[in-house]
Length: 103
Image (cartoon, rainbow, N blue to C red; front, side, top):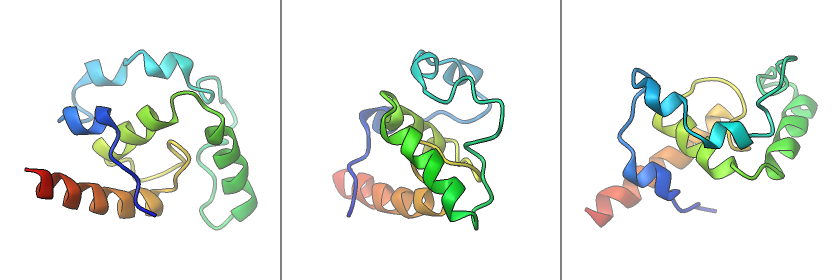
């Protein structure tokens, strides 16, 4: 399954150095904003812990924005927008192909 790039990803050329991107309003609506136990940074081999984090993301109203941020800033760890780092790398490759085709 190939997901469409969220519009936030398509219009943003931000990097982690751009702090304004780190303070986007979507973060205030994220279901993970008060996580103090590291729920969203499980050991990738712990399938159960990964599934718990993904379940929270599945009901998060800003999962697409979170995913776009993680891909745009190349987050190497954790569950972002309901996807693991490995899954995000695959999605990023597909999105980049799509963006190049559209250019």
